Length: 166
Length: 102
Image 1: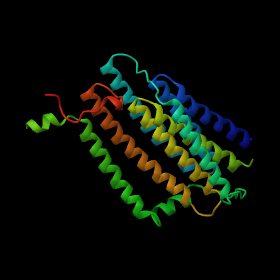
Image 2: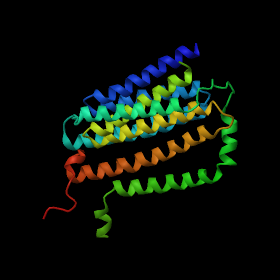
Image 3: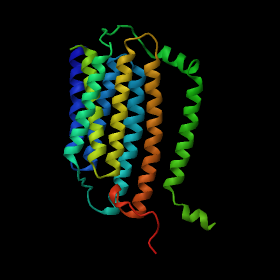
Image 4: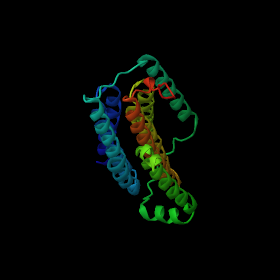
């Protein structure tokens, strides 16, 4: 049962990621990205990473996607017509990604990662404990980074011309 | 093909789709989405390989990747909006002059 759900979710993620390449409008690409992120959240849930699944849904599907849709709406308003995207260098892009896929698969088969997965249940509690003991310093630095980024983004998006007149 | 193999190939597919989007699309927002897709492919691998060891390092690393991706998306979209207001275009090829036209 778990296997079937995993394969269905993987199929959704792969199909929506490939569809993003061929879609013509930016908004449809955002919807494809949303489907891909939600399917990945489901895969995290099956992989016993419940906290990451919740974070994925809350932050990516709830935060980043809303920001992207907001940016699409705002940029749509200026131009006054739906955003059509053109592609360039399709063949070179395909060659480049195929080459990198080849290198990745080759590197994966060179390493001895073929162990069967251990079925240990890893749930939220050890992750929280590690976040506040071993990883306390990166956690705090990440908080400061988030604060600085949000202030910087707000300052960048607002117009400075008004403040320079004061 | 084991489950780990299968999920590794899914990660490769997601990463290469993201790379191709970044390389071929002519819209800054779509390029940002491609970068998000590539970061998610890396996250998937971190979570999958975390099952094969004791400890939570992979999941914690994925958590920090999500954190940095959020910062990157916020700043990137702010810059795109700013460029859009000035150039009236989100095509990176058209944004070529650094100075205002006199």
